[in-house]
Length: 297
Image 1: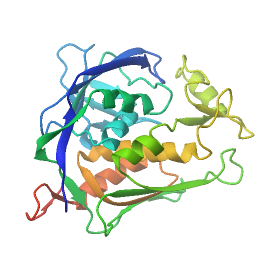
Image 2: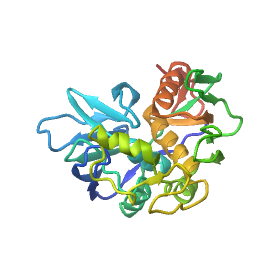
Image 3: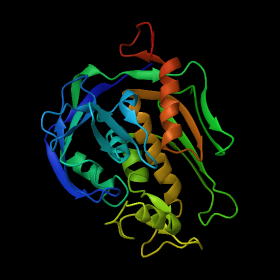
Image 4: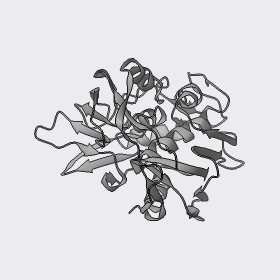
């Protein structure tokens, strides 16, 4: 398996925003990190707390989002940050934030990609770990009518197909998209795609105490007729592009590059996370060209 140098950023950069779920004002800072550090989140508002590795072993169950926790401290809604870092192939980074949740911004990771570009991406003197698949790995549920499968791919790299289809009665039309990921393609074709929900879901979330400061400009909200409320689509298939963005962010919990083909049908964060666990149970890892592969687990 071909490998590439690990990468980090040259400069510390920061931004601020509001948490979509908690409504908290949060300042977010990206810091450079050494080789083999990986990606980790640190809560600066919790004195003495340790960085939380952005790895599947630290994921905690949450509805509609991905969260990690360690020693009683957690960080929520990390998937868009993870997608930006993974999509741009930034492997080592410490993310500091002074609140419980990553800011939602406009529901995409476009602003994060622009910030990371300004930080200057630099190569490091160690190689990035690569995981390949000797056999297909599948997570499916008949009850939920979902399926996500990762398969070996003859050529190098990662390709993702997402099939979005919520049925004939859904206000969101079926959409399918396949991409072969590169940093350039991710930034150009995926990073701008925003979170989407139905208006009824927004009402339910607010009734449960979430999203008190979210407006229709902060994400895509569809009414029962399929119209976007007080906003406009950036592309006709923006919804499926965002689902691919989420897949990229969740697959980054591997802590390594994945070489293979992922086909997802109506999967969400929970399904993607279980796929990561199963990939680690069977995948083969390599850092050095020509060395024997070791089993991941």
